[in-house]
Image (tube, rainbow, N blue to C red; front, side, top):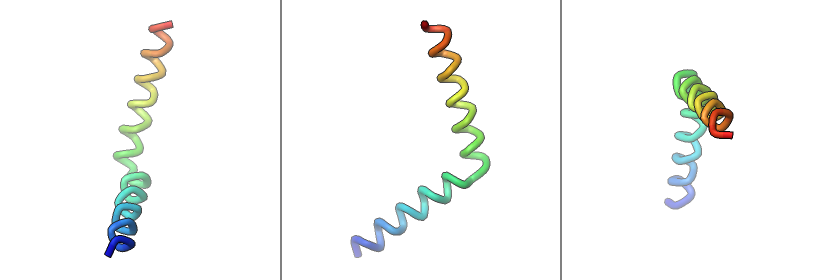
Length: 41
């Protein structure tokens, strides 16, 4: 039962990881953070 739950979590994580929309948003967030860091220093 526990292993099954872990497997499901891993599947969900990899799904969102390879979901282009989620990836795009992640990249946009990363760029935003970099800009904030540059402006802050």
